[in-house]
Amino acid sequence: MIDLHTHILPGIDDGVKTEDEAVEFARAAAQDGTRIIVATPHCKEGFYFNDRQTILPAVEKLRERLSREGVSIDLLPGAEVHVCPDLPERIRDGRAPTLADNGKTLLLELSLSQYPVELENLVFQLKLAGIEVLFAHPERIRYFQEDVTRYEEMVRLGAWGQITTGSIVGLFGEDTRKFSEELLRKGLVHVIASDAHNLRHRNPILTEAVSATASLVGQARAEAMTTSAPRALLDGAPPDLPPVEGRSAAAGSFFKRLFGRSRG
Image (cartoon, rainbow, N blue to C red; front, side, top):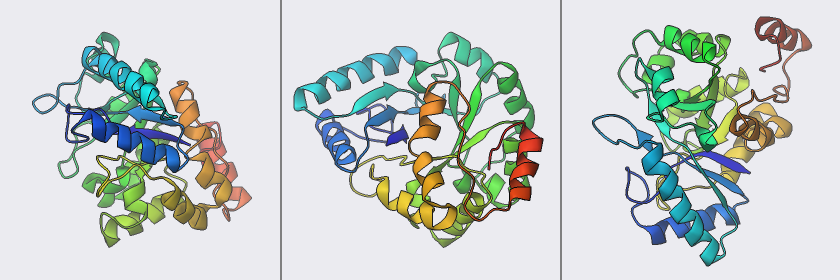
């Protein structure tokens, strides 16, 4: 499995605090079946300024430590980049790091409670620039929770969605769990990731959420959300997911006509 969203780099945001803790974090993920972890520290001006020059050396240092400790994890660089109006320029100059440092896939974070400004235009501009936009935890964003059509518009524009394991299993409350199920059944999220911050409350375990997701969308799609879909995004390509189990052929054809490929 691949975990596209973690806060494993020690001491640079609100995630893992020490290198020793990062090693145990990676070991727990490996024991759960994860083989690739993407380090995605927060990148938000005024809070956590983590650019390529910060992240790449930190990833290399931790990668060397994991190798010495015999932890079978491939650690890749990335960032969880907070929304701002000049993101295409920030991606070009390295202030907004991309997943696997591929220059093509952005893990985009919105405020959990504040409404974004001109979000449709930003996503459109990013797509024009050749960027695959992956929304971090859309199921936890109030702007989307209050009106799911706002998020549906993001998907229509070509964005993707990463749902968090804790949301699926109820860690963030019943309302978020129900909204997660709605997005999953509608085929509106494409990657399962842990968004893990530590080993206590927000850990890097994927299998429990994959199992819960399989009961909603089918085993093939649930597994693909932690394997082929994140792999495609790391390669800078759009994921091609199996359909949501139980959706009609007509519904699949509608999505294929709408997006030029099946996103359901």
